[in-house]
Each structure stands twice: as C-alpha cells, then as structure tokens.
Image (tube, rainbow, N blue to C red):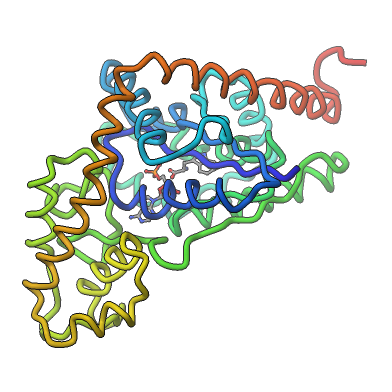
Length: 332
Ligand code: AMP
Ligand code: TRP
C-alpha cells in the first residue's frame, strides 16, 4: 500500500485557494488512488508559529475538520486527525531539527515573507517550521504529498532531509514526491493578482473564504480586479487578473480554459464575472449546507478519534525505529 499525507493549518478561515490548491485534490485522489492510504491532518502545531487566540484556535480546528468532510473527504477512506493529538509529530520534528541546518531554514521563502509581518518578534518555531513539516510527512513514509505551489520548497527540503538522514543513519524514511494541481496550484488575490490568495490578506475583498456569505462571494468576484483590455483570454503574464478568474471557472465547471475562452469570445468582463459569481455560489452552497450539519453532529469527533488512533499506530512504530537508529533511550 502506498501512503498520501497532507495538512492544512487551522489559522483563520479556509480560502478558495486552500480548497482549489489542496482540498479538492485530496477529494479527487481518494477516488483515483485505490492502492493508497490517506493521512490528512489539521496542522494545529504549525498554527502556533504565530500568536493565536486559544478560543479561536479551538474553534478553527473543529471548523476545518467539518470543512474537510463537507467538501467530500470520505472518513472511510481517509484518516483525518488533529496533528497535536499524535505526539510523534513533535518527537520527529525535534529530530528533524537536528538533521536540518539553520541556513537551509533561513532560505525558505515562506519564512522570509512571514518574518517581515511579525511585529511582536519572530518566534523560533517560525524558523524551524519546515523541520516539523518534514516530520509530518516522513513519519508515515508518505509516497505522495498533495500541496499548493507555495509548499513545494518545503517539500524539496523534506526530500533532502530524508535522503540525508538515510545516508547518515541507514535507510529509514521514504523520499516523498510532491503533487501540485495543473490548474489551481496558485490561486491569486482578487484585488492583486500578483499576490497569492492568502488567509492573512489585509484586504478581505481579495480573498474568498469558503464560509463567506454567498452574497459576499458574489460581490467579491464581481469587484475582482481585471486587466486593461477587455478580452477574455488566458495569459498569466499580461492578464493575470482574468487568467486567475478563468482558472477558478475552469476548476469548478470542469471545462477547459480554451472552451471557456470560446464561450465568452464576444462577452465583456462584467458578463463573465456575473456568470462566474453565479456558478461559484452554486458550487459552494451545498458545501456550506453540509458544513453546518457536520459541525453540530457527533460524527465529527468519532472521525477524528479513529483517524488519530490509526495515525498513532504507525507513528509510534516509526519513532521507535528512529530512536534506535540514533541511539536514543534504552531501546535494545
Ligand atoms: P495553509 O493555508 O498555508 O495551511 O495552506 C494549506 C494548503 O493550501 C497548502 O497545500 C497550500 O499550498 C494550499 N494553498 C494555500 N493558499 C493557496 C492558493 N492561493 N492557491 C493554491 N493553493 C493554496
Ligand atoms: N505547511 C503547510 C501549509 O502551511 C501545512 C502542512 C503542515 C503540510 N504539514 C504538512 C502540508 C505536511 C503537507 C504535508 O500550507
């Protein structure tokens, strides 16, 4: 059996970028990859690399679990769990810190970006974050890691660390492969199509949250920044605004970009945006309805308990092996 591992941070609300770049992939893959075990988790330990409010964090963890299920994650096929409930993530995270070098961490683009935003000081785990992320993946000997484009650099580092550990201590970890979607790997802000759509955007009009009021979603699409001429064609370089909207349209309808360009050859931006707004809202509506039901149901905890128990079983054995390789503790 192969294994697939991925996680999303429960910091803030889930965006359309998270959905199209990550969650939608998990859902498609659970149908396609019948020979693969899935481990999908809520990366709450990663969230505390920046200051979090306890009540809000607790709420976001449950909310994210309900979103995963509402989007179609099948708990029969997928082990869904909360990262901090499987302590081996911390244990291997620490060991990965002894495998990675500081300059490798300092080179990470996400660290460099996030560091600039920390007015209250940079926590040391903002720097060491990729060591924990490597642990998340290597703990389960993942073959495949579906992520958005912004995580590829962390995945490259994970691969380097697996190879380094294996060569220093003997074959221990599988070297994982990243998997990014062909379209949707990087959904851009609706207000600045040169920036990725991000939970922490200062301008909320640039970000669609999956749980936004449906009218708000419509308005955000309608007021999305487009480009200077009026043609609806895909050209990321010269027309990033409309290209981003075309990507969203393509993913939610399943139509190819060229089909959509043909349909709208004689339309203006306003017509195109109005149609996209309608389609997106109809796409998100059932997800929001399922979300509300799931959030209130006892099923959520049962799913998370089962996911945690299955994950622990594997993670425990892996940590025993790693400790033995390193000479830690008193394991014979
Ligand atoms: P995060 O919100 O940083 O925990 O990201 C969770 C997952 O969503 C990761 O796989 C990211 O690569 C993906 N992701 C985040 N923002 C975007 C975006 N704007 N477009 C595509 N994927 C994204
Ligand atoms: N770092 C990822 C993000 O911010 C979330 C994450 C944590 C993750 N651990 C992971 C993704 C392991 C894939 C595999 O988007």
